[in-house]
Length: 415
Image 1 (spheres, rainbow, N blue to C red):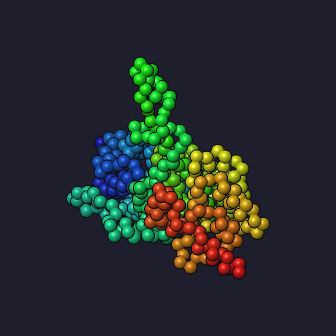
Image 2: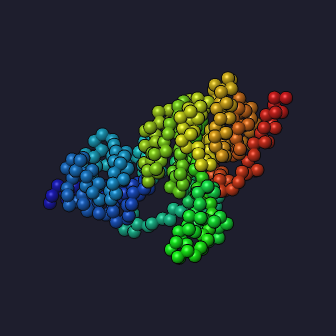
Image 3: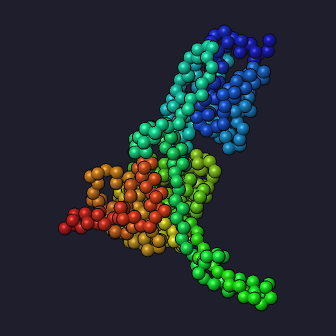
Protein backbone atom coordinates (compact mmCIF):
# COMPACT_ATOMS: atom_id res chain seq x y z
CA UNK A 1 0.00 0.00 0.00
CA UNK A 2 1.39 3.42 -1.00
CA UNK A 3 1.86 6.34 1.40
CA UNK A 4 -1.18 8.20 0.04
CA UNK A 5 -3.36 5.08 0.30
CA UNK A 6 -2.14 4.45 3.87
CA UNK A 7 -3.04 7.99 4.91
CA UNK A 8 -6.51 7.64 3.43
CA UNK A 9 -6.98 4.25 5.04
CA UNK A 10 -6.09 5.70 8.46
CA UNK A 11 -8.35 8.67 7.78
CA UNK A 12 -11.27 6.46 6.85
CA UNK A 13 -10.89 4.44 10.08
CA UNK A 14 -10.95 7.64 12.19
CA UNK A 15 -14.05 9.16 10.66
CA UNK A 16 -12.98 10.36 7.21
CA UNK A 17 -11.71 13.75 8.42
CA UNK A 18 -9.62 14.43 5.32
CA UNK A 19 -12.45 13.64 2.91
CA UNK A 20 -14.84 15.83 4.90
CA UNK A 21 -12.37 18.73 4.86
CA UNK A 22 -11.85 18.42 1.12
CA UNK A 23 -15.63 18.46 0.64
CA UNK A 24 -15.96 21.52 2.84
CA UNK A 25 -13.13 23.23 0.93
CA UNK A 26 -14.88 22.51 -2.39
CA UNK A 27 -18.11 24.08 -1.09
CA UNK A 28 -16.18 27.18 0.00
CA UNK A 29 -14.66 27.49 -3.48
CA UNK A 30 -18.11 27.19 -5.05
CA UNK A 31 -19.41 29.94 -2.73
CA UNK A 32 -16.44 32.10 -3.74
CA UNK A 33 -17.42 31.85 -7.41
CA UNK A 34 -15.47 28.92 -8.86
CA UNK A 35 -17.32 26.45 -11.06
CA UNK A 36 -17.02 23.53 -8.68
CA UNK A 37 -19.71 20.86 -8.92
CA UNK A 38 -20.53 18.05 -6.49
CA UNK A 39 -18.30 15.65 -8.43
CA UNK A 40 -15.23 17.87 -8.10
CA UNK A 41 -14.79 17.01 -4.41
CA UNK A 42 -14.90 13.30 -5.23
CA UNK A 43 -12.36 13.82 -8.02
CA UNK A 44 -10.05 15.71 -5.65
CA UNK A 45 -10.22 12.95 -3.03
CA UNK A 46 -9.52 10.30 -5.66
CA UNK A 47 -6.63 12.35 -7.10
CA UNK A 48 -5.05 12.69 -3.67
CA UNK A 49 -5.45 8.97 -3.08
CA UNK A 50 -3.73 8.09 -6.35
CA UNK A 51 -1.03 10.77 -6.29
CA UNK A 52 -0.14 10.41 -2.64
CA UNK A 53 0.52 13.30 -0.29
CA UNK A 54 4.06 14.30 0.52
CA UNK A 55 4.61 18.00 1.07
CA UNK A 56 2.29 20.98 1.22
CA UNK A 57 3.24 21.96 -2.34
CA UNK A 58 2.20 18.54 -3.66
CA UNK A 59 -1.13 18.85 -1.86
CA UNK A 60 -1.66 22.37 -3.31
CA UNK A 61 -1.01 21.45 -6.93
CA UNK A 62 -3.11 18.30 -6.75
CA UNK A 63 -6.12 20.31 -5.59
CA UNK A 64 -5.27 23.07 -8.08
CA UNK A 65 -5.36 20.67 -11.02
CA UNK A 66 -8.87 19.53 -10.05
CA UNK A 67 -10.60 22.73 -8.92
CA UNK A 68 -9.10 25.44 -11.17
CA UNK A 69 -10.53 25.32 -14.68
CA UNK A 70 -10.15 28.98 -15.70
CA UNK A 71 -7.11 31.26 -15.58
CA UNK A 72 -9.01 33.98 -13.73
CA UNK A 73 -9.79 31.53 -10.89
CA UNK A 74 -6.11 31.09 -9.98
CA UNK A 75 -5.90 33.98 -7.53
CA UNK A 76 -9.21 33.09 -5.87
CA UNK A 77 -8.00 29.52 -5.33
CA UNK A 78 -4.71 30.75 -3.85
CA UNK A 79 -6.52 33.00 -1.38
CA UNK A 80 -8.98 30.28 -0.41
CA UNK A 81 -6.21 27.71 0.05
CA UNK A 82 -4.19 30.09 2.24
CA UNK A 83 -7.17 30.99 4.43
CA UNK A 84 -8.42 27.42 4.76
CA UNK A 85 -5.10 25.71 5.53
CA UNK A 86 -3.17 28.57 7.10
CA UNK A 87 -2.47 27.34 10.68
CA UNK A 88 1.04 26.07 11.47
CA UNK A 89 1.43 22.28 11.20
CA UNK A 90 -2.18 21.99 10.06
CA UNK A 91 -1.20 19.97 7.01
CA UNK A 92 0.94 17.61 9.04
CA UNK A 93 -1.81 17.01 11.59
CA UNK A 94 -4.34 16.50 8.85
CA UNK A 95 -2.15 14.02 7.02
CA UNK A 96 -1.73 12.08 10.23
CA UNK A 97 -5.54 12.04 10.62
CA UNK A 98 -5.28 13.73 14.00
CA UNK A 99 -7.54 16.66 13.11
CA UNK A 100 -11.26 15.80 13.27
CA UNK A 101 -12.50 18.83 11.34
CA UNK A 102 -11.02 21.85 9.63
CA UNK A 103 -10.74 24.91 11.91
CA UNK A 104 -13.15 27.75 11.25
CA UNK A 105 -11.40 30.71 9.65
CA UNK A 106 -10.74 33.57 12.09
CA UNK A 107 -11.80 37.10 11.30
CA UNK A 108 -9.05 39.25 9.91
CA UNK A 109 -8.65 42.61 8.25
CA UNK A 110 -9.55 42.12 4.63
CA UNK A 111 -9.13 44.01 1.40
CA UNK A 112 -12.11 46.42 1.29
CA UNK A 113 -12.71 45.83 -2.41
CA UNK A 114 -12.25 42.06 -2.66
CA UNK A 115 -13.98 40.04 0.08
CA UNK A 116 -15.35 37.20 -2.00
CA UNK A 117 -13.03 34.44 -0.73
CA UNK A 118 -12.95 35.36 2.96
CA UNK A 119 -16.72 35.98 3.04
CA UNK A 120 -17.34 32.57 1.49
CA UNK A 121 -15.19 30.86 4.12
CA UNK A 122 -16.66 32.84 7.01
CA UNK A 123 -20.22 32.19 5.87
CA UNK A 124 -19.79 28.47 5.51
CA UNK A 125 -18.49 28.12 9.10
CA UNK A 126 -17.46 24.77 10.51
CA UNK A 127 -18.36 21.66 8.54
CA UNK A 128 -21.07 19.63 10.17
CA UNK A 129 -20.51 15.90 10.82
CA UNK A 130 -21.60 13.83 7.88
CA UNK A 131 -24.08 11.05 8.47
CA UNK A 132 -23.32 8.06 6.28
CA UNK A 133 -24.87 7.01 4.06
CA UNK A 134 -26.47 10.31 3.01
CA UNK A 135 -26.62 11.66 -0.55
CA UNK A 136 -25.49 15.22 -1.15
CA UNK A 137 -28.44 17.56 -1.64
CA UNK A 138 -28.19 20.60 -3.86
CA UNK A 139 -29.97 23.51 -2.14
CA UNK A 140 -31.58 26.28 -4.16
CA UNK A 141 -30.21 29.42 -2.50
CA UNK A 142 -32.16 31.88 -4.64
CA UNK A 143 -34.05 34.53 -2.77
CA UNK A 144 -37.76 34.20 -2.26
CA UNK A 145 -40.08 37.10 -3.05
CA UNK A 146 -40.36 38.19 0.57
CA UNK A 147 -36.61 37.89 1.14
CA UNK A 148 -35.92 39.97 -1.94
CA UNK A 149 -38.35 42.67 -0.79
CA UNK A 150 -36.54 42.90 2.55
CA UNK A 151 -33.15 43.00 0.83
CA UNK A 152 -34.24 45.72 -1.59
CA UNK A 153 -35.14 48.09 1.24
CA UNK A 154 -32.27 47.23 3.61
CA UNK A 155 -29.49 49.76 4.09
CA UNK A 156 -26.11 48.74 2.64
CA UNK A 157 -24.41 49.79 5.86
CA UNK A 158 -26.52 47.33 7.88
CA UNK A 159 -26.06 44.30 5.60
CA UNK A 160 -24.02 41.27 6.57
CA UNK A 161 -21.35 39.86 4.27
CA UNK A 162 -23.82 37.30 2.87
CA UNK A 163 -26.43 39.99 2.21
CA UNK A 164 -23.85 42.19 0.50
CA UNK A 165 -23.03 39.29 -1.83
CA UNK A 166 -26.74 38.83 -2.57
CA UNK A 167 -27.08 42.57 -3.18
CA UNK A 168 -24.23 42.48 -5.67
CA UNK A 169 -25.93 39.69 -7.60
CA UNK A 170 -29.19 41.65 -7.56
CA UNK A 171 -27.42 44.73 -8.92
CA UNK A 172 -26.22 42.80 -11.97
CA UNK A 173 -29.87 41.96 -12.73
CA UNK A 174 -31.09 45.57 -12.64
CA UNK A 175 -32.67 47.02 -15.76
CA UNK A 176 -29.88 49.41 -16.69
CA UNK A 177 -30.63 52.80 -18.26
CA UNK A 178 -30.41 53.26 -22.04
CA UNK A 179 -31.13 56.96 -22.48
CA UNK A 180 -30.25 58.00 -26.04
CA UNK A 181 -29.44 61.47 -27.32
CA UNK A 182 -29.82 62.79 -30.85
CA UNK A 183 -26.62 63.92 -32.53
CA UNK A 184 -25.86 66.18 -35.49
CA UNK A 185 -24.67 63.19 -37.50
CA UNK A 186 -27.22 61.70 -39.86
CA UNK A 187 -28.09 58.09 -40.55
CA UNK A 188 -30.06 56.65 -43.45
CA UNK A 189 -33.77 56.25 -42.76
CA UNK A 190 -36.75 55.67 -45.02
CA UNK A 191 -38.95 57.64 -42.58
CA UNK A 192 -36.58 60.56 -42.11
CA UNK A 193 -37.59 64.15 -42.87
CA UNK A 194 -34.15 65.32 -43.97
CA UNK A 195 -33.07 64.88 -47.60
CA UNK A 196 -29.64 63.28 -47.90
CA UNK A 197 -28.26 65.01 -51.01
CA UNK A 198 -25.08 62.95 -51.20
CA UNK A 199 -26.91 59.61 -51.22
CA UNK A 200 -29.56 61.01 -53.57
CA UNK A 201 -26.98 62.10 -56.17
CA UNK A 202 -25.14 58.78 -55.95
CA UNK A 203 -28.41 56.92 -56.48
CA UNK A 204 -29.28 59.08 -59.48
CA UNK A 205 -25.91 58.34 -61.13
CA UNK A 206 -26.50 54.62 -60.73
CA UNK A 207 -30.02 55.02 -62.16
CA UNK A 208 -28.88 56.92 -65.26
CA UNK A 209 -30.00 60.40 -64.18
CA UNK A 210 -33.25 59.49 -62.49
CA UNK A 211 -33.41 61.31 -59.16
CA UNK A 212 -34.62 59.23 -56.22
CA UNK A 213 -34.55 61.26 -53.04
CA UNK A 214 -32.90 59.55 -50.11
CA UNK A 215 -33.82 60.59 -46.61
CA UNK A 216 -32.00 60.61 -43.30
CA UNK A 217 -32.60 61.37 -39.66
CA UNK A 218 -30.35 62.35 -36.72
CA UNK A 219 -28.34 59.49 -35.31
CA UNK A 220 -28.81 58.46 -31.68
CA UNK A 221 -26.23 57.32 -29.14
CA UNK A 222 -26.13 56.50 -25.45
CA UNK A 223 -25.29 59.42 -23.21
CA UNK A 224 -21.96 58.92 -21.39
CA UNK A 225 -21.96 58.69 -17.60
CA UNK A 226 -19.30 60.20 -15.35
CA UNK A 227 -19.23 59.02 -11.71
CA UNK A 228 -17.40 60.85 -8.92
CA UNK A 229 -17.44 58.57 -5.87
CA UNK A 230 -16.49 59.53 -2.32
CA UNK A 231 -14.40 56.79 -0.66
CA UNK A 232 -13.90 58.44 2.74
CA UNK A 233 -14.53 56.51 5.93
CA UNK A 234 -18.22 57.49 6.14
CA UNK A 235 -18.88 56.54 2.50
CA UNK A 236 -16.69 53.49 1.84
CA UNK A 237 -19.43 50.88 2.45
CA UNK A 238 -21.85 52.57 0.06
CA UNK A 239 -19.20 53.27 -2.58
CA UNK A 240 -18.09 49.62 -2.63
CA UNK A 241 -21.56 48.47 -3.61
CA UNK A 242 -22.07 51.36 -6.02
CA UNK A 243 -18.86 50.43 -7.85
CA UNK A 244 -20.49 47.09 -8.67
CA UNK A 245 -23.35 49.05 -10.24
CA UNK A 246 -20.85 51.11 -12.27
CA UNK A 247 -19.10 47.91 -13.38
CA UNK A 248 -22.39 46.47 -14.65
CA UNK A 249 -23.27 49.78 -16.30
CA UNK A 250 -19.89 50.04 -18.05
CA UNK A 251 -20.63 46.81 -19.92
CA UNK A 252 -23.58 48.50 -21.64
CA UNK A 253 -22.44 52.10 -22.17
CA UNK A 254 -19.50 54.46 -21.82
CA UNK A 255 -18.76 55.16 -18.15
CA UNK A 256 -15.91 57.22 -16.68
CA UNK A 257 -15.36 56.40 -13.01
CA UNK A 258 -13.40 58.46 -10.49
CA UNK A 259 -12.98 58.02 -6.74
CA UNK A 260 -11.81 60.62 -4.27
CA UNK A 261 -11.01 60.96 -0.59
CA UNK A 262 -8.04 63.21 -0.09
CA UNK A 263 -7.07 62.94 -3.78
CA UNK A 264 -8.71 62.16 -7.12
CA UNK A 265 -8.08 58.78 -8.79
CA UNK A 266 -9.28 57.62 -12.21
CA UNK A 267 -10.35 53.94 -12.09
CA UNK A 268 -12.13 53.78 -15.46
CA UNK A 269 -9.77 51.23 -17.02
CA UNK A 270 -9.71 48.94 -14.00
CA UNK A 271 -13.52 48.71 -13.94
CA UNK A 272 -13.46 47.39 -17.50
CA UNK A 273 -12.17 44.02 -16.26
CA UNK A 274 -14.69 41.27 -16.91
CA UNK A 275 -14.72 39.89 -13.37
CA UNK A 276 -16.22 42.48 -10.95
CA UNK A 277 -14.20 41.34 -7.93
CA UNK A 278 -10.98 41.40 -9.91
CA UNK A 279 -11.87 44.86 -11.22
CA UNK A 280 -12.50 46.21 -7.73
CA UNK A 281 -9.32 44.65 -6.41
CA UNK A 282 -7.28 46.33 -9.14
CA UNK A 283 -9.06 49.59 -8.39
CA UNK A 284 -8.20 49.23 -4.71
CA UNK A 285 -4.56 48.77 -5.66
CA UNK A 286 -4.54 52.12 -7.44
CA UNK A 287 -6.33 54.00 -4.65
CA UNK A 288 -4.16 55.09 -1.72
CA UNK A 289 -6.72 57.03 0.31
CA UNK A 290 -9.49 54.44 0.67
CA UNK A 291 -11.54 54.93 3.88
CA UNK A 292 -9.43 57.96 4.80
CA UNK A 293 -10.26 61.65 5.11
CA UNK A 294 -12.42 63.85 2.91
CA UNK A 295 -11.35 66.80 0.76
CA UNK A 296 -14.21 67.27 -1.65
CA UNK A 297 -13.39 70.77 -2.91
CA UNK A 298 -9.77 70.08 -4.01
CA UNK A 299 -10.81 66.81 -5.67
CA UNK A 300 -13.69 68.38 -7.63
CA UNK A 301 -11.39 71.23 -8.63
CA UNK A 302 -8.75 68.73 -9.81
CA UNK A 303 -11.39 66.97 -11.91
CA UNK A 304 -12.49 70.27 -13.47
CA UNK A 305 -8.94 71.20 -14.42
CA UNK A 306 -7.64 67.80 -15.60
CA UNK A 307 -10.64 65.77 -16.83
CA UNK A 308 -13.75 67.85 -17.50
CA UNK A 309 -12.86 68.70 -21.10
CA UNK A 310 -11.99 65.07 -21.84
CA UNK A 311 -15.04 63.28 -20.45
CA UNK A 312 -17.88 65.80 -20.08
CA UNK A 313 -18.63 66.25 -23.77
CA UNK A 314 -21.50 64.80 -25.80
CA UNK A 315 -24.18 65.40 -23.16
CA UNK A 316 -22.59 63.58 -20.26
CA UNK A 317 -24.49 62.87 -17.04
CA UNK A 318 -22.50 63.31 -13.82
CA UNK A 319 -23.26 61.16 -10.76
CA UNK A 320 -21.76 62.66 -7.60
CA UNK A 321 -21.77 60.13 -4.74
CA UNK A 322 -20.88 61.81 -1.44
CA UNK A 323 -22.43 62.79 1.88
CA UNK A 324 -21.19 66.37 1.46
CA UNK A 325 -19.45 66.44 4.85
CA UNK A 326 -16.48 68.59 3.83
CA UNK A 327 -13.96 69.62 6.47
CA UNK A 328 -12.62 72.69 4.64
CA UNK A 329 -15.79 74.34 3.37
CA UNK A 330 -15.37 77.70 5.08
CA UNK A 331 -13.62 79.47 2.17
CA UNK A 332 -16.34 78.76 -0.41
CA UNK A 333 -14.06 76.86 -2.81
CA UNK A 334 -16.44 73.88 -2.85
CA UNK A 335 -19.29 76.02 -4.15
CA UNK A 336 -17.10 77.45 -6.92
CA UNK A 337 -15.87 74.00 -7.97
CA UNK A 338 -19.44 72.67 -8.03
CA UNK A 339 -20.64 75.62 -10.09
CA UNK A 340 -18.02 74.95 -12.75
CA UNK A 341 -18.83 71.23 -12.74
CA UNK A 342 -22.54 71.96 -13.14
CA UNK A 343 -21.92 74.26 -16.09
CA UNK A 344 -19.74 71.67 -17.84
CA UNK A 345 -22.24 68.79 -17.94
CA UNK A 346 -25.75 68.28 -19.23
CA UNK A 347 -27.14 66.90 -15.97
CA UNK A 348 -25.71 66.67 -12.44
CA UNK A 349 -27.26 64.17 -10.01
CA UNK A 350 -26.18 64.16 -6.37
CA UNK A 351 -26.51 60.78 -4.63
CA UNK A 352 -26.34 61.11 -0.84
CA UNK A 353 -26.94 58.19 1.58
CA UNK A 354 -27.80 60.67 4.35
CA UNK A 355 -31.08 61.36 2.56
CA UNK A 356 -32.38 58.03 3.88
CA UNK A 357 -33.08 59.73 7.22
CA UNK A 358 -36.51 61.35 7.43
CA UNK A 359 -35.16 64.14 9.62
CA UNK A 360 -32.33 65.06 7.24
CA UNK A 361 -31.66 68.80 7.08
CA UNK A 362 -29.19 70.69 4.90
CA UNK A 363 -27.29 72.21 7.82
CA UNK A 364 -23.70 71.15 7.04
CA UNK A 365 -21.70 73.84 5.31
CA UNK A 366 -20.49 71.51 2.58
CA UNK A 367 -24.04 70.39 1.79
CA UNK A 368 -25.22 73.98 1.54
CA UNK A 369 -22.47 74.77 -0.98
CA UNK A 370 -23.22 71.74 -3.18
CA UNK A 371 -27.02 71.96 -3.19
CA UNK A 372 -27.51 75.06 -5.42
CA UNK A 373 -25.49 73.47 -8.24
CA UNK A 374 -27.23 70.09 -8.71
CA UNK A 375 -30.19 69.17 -10.90
CA UNK A 376 -31.41 66.24 -8.79
CA UNK A 377 -30.87 65.16 -5.19
CA UNK A 378 -31.38 61.44 -4.54
CA UNK A 379 -30.58 58.81 -1.94
CA UNK A 380 -28.29 55.86 -2.69
CA UNK A 381 -28.41 53.55 0.32
CA UNK A 382 -30.15 50.36 -0.89
CA UNK A 383 -31.11 48.38 -3.98
CA UNK A 384 -34.47 50.12 -4.24
CA UNK A 385 -32.75 53.51 -4.52
CA UNK A 386 -30.54 52.08 -7.31
CA UNK A 387 -33.64 50.94 -9.19
CA UNK A 388 -35.05 54.46 -8.86
CA UNK A 389 -31.78 55.87 -10.20
CA UNK A 390 -31.94 53.58 -13.25
CA UNK A 391 -35.43 54.79 -14.04
CA UNK A 392 -34.36 58.40 -13.54
CA UNK A 393 -31.44 58.06 -15.95
CA UNK A 394 -33.83 56.84 -18.64
CA UNK A 395 -36.17 59.81 -18.20
CA UNK A 396 -35.90 63.61 -18.34
CA UNK A 397 -35.01 65.50 -15.20
CA UNK A 398 -37.12 64.15 -12.39
CA UNK A 399 -39.25 66.61 -10.48
CA UNK A 400 -39.53 64.15 -7.61
CA UNK A 401 -35.83 64.68 -6.86
CA UNK A 402 -35.66 68.42 -7.42
CA UNK A 403 -33.43 70.21 -4.87
CA UNK A 404 -35.92 73.09 -4.52
CA UNK A 405 -37.28 71.72 -1.24
CA UNK A 406 -33.84 71.70 0.30
CA UNK A 407 -32.97 75.11 -1.13
CA UNK A 408 -36.05 76.55 0.59
CA UNK A 409 -34.98 74.88 3.80
CA UNK A 410 -31.52 76.39 3.46
CA UNK A 411 -33.04 79.84 2.90
CA UNK A 412 -35.13 79.38 6.04
CA UNK A 413 -32.04 78.41 8.04
CA UNK A 414 -30.16 81.51 6.86
CA UNK A 415 -33.15 83.74 7.64
